[in-house]
Amino acid sequence: MTGAHFRASPGKVSFAVRLTPKGGRDAIDGWAPSADGQSHLKARVSAPPHDGQANEALIELLARALGVAKSKVTLVAGASSRLKRVEVDGDGPTLAARLSQWEKPP
Image (cartoon, rainbow, N blue to C red):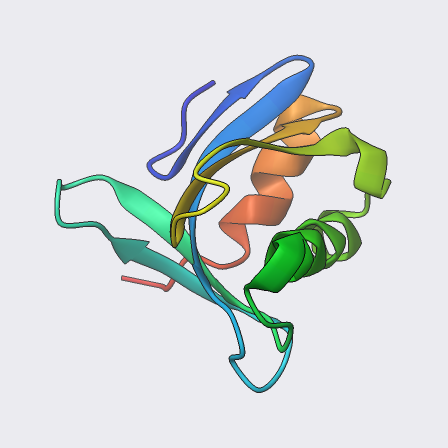
């Protein structure tokens, strides 16, 4: 299954995230288009980008929001970049439904 913003298979879902470290609070702000025409999930964390603190906070935020263990969330690309690629292990359709909650109505 492929959503407009993510790719889901029976055992995982993958998607792009644009992370804002030191964003004042930990929150997911919804889907937005990227410059290349793709889309990404906008997220902010209060942690600074030093020593991987912001990445760890992002993993915790996504795990909590998607209802999975932190060990199921993997940062597969972009560790030192604002734009990251994330994979989440679990039931693809369930995760896809949870990710869809941040879509804005037309």
